[in-house]
Length: 229
Image 1: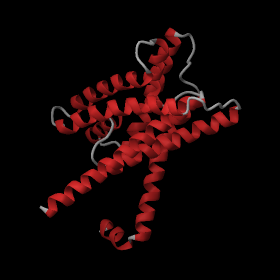
Image 2 (image 1 turned 45 degrees about the horizontal axis):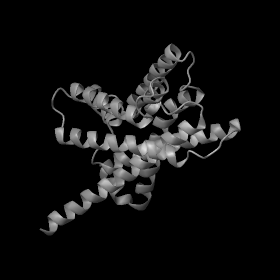
Image 3 (image 1 turned 60 degrees about the horizontal axis):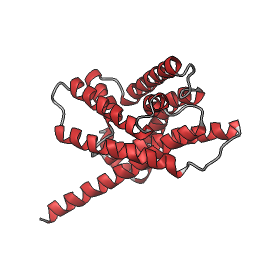
Image 4 (image 1 turned 135 degrees about the vertical axis):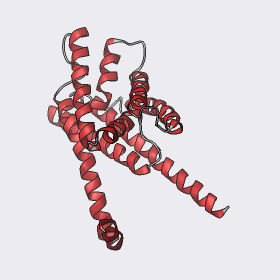
């Protein structure tokens, strides 16, 4: 009974960590959008669609994209996926969409006019988004559909997760630019910030993992040696 209680406490702690990462990631997306230099790659397609079609909010289009990413994930894993995890992903994806709307609402009155400040805010958004994603991975209970899709493709192809993420970030930007150019006449939601974020977010995740491993090795050298053996 005590063991079960400990397991429940650990699971609750992991989900709490994941939800914290979820909110941090949504703030990263909001920061990038507010900078006005092109939103983050993970949100670029739904953001571009929201500029063309106002039927749904930015967060709601983000939810629909998550459904598509879940479908790709199931196809890549060829029916061997964990359907409980898929159900959890679906629920959390809709939470993420609403958190993104909330985050955009929270900073709605923030005014950033100078280009250097906008550029700095865009870099901050990339760092915050990457940190939120890294925390979600460390939570170890679930991932958002986009990141879970990257993980599934990484396992299926043998490619590093971070490199798969960078590839899809660039792919999302290309699709977003095409949508905006076709329907608006200019890449409204895709600018230099989007291209920088496509490379920066994945590399920031690598950097956070590097710092985590170095810190763990410093405070727990015995465990670090055991892992190497």
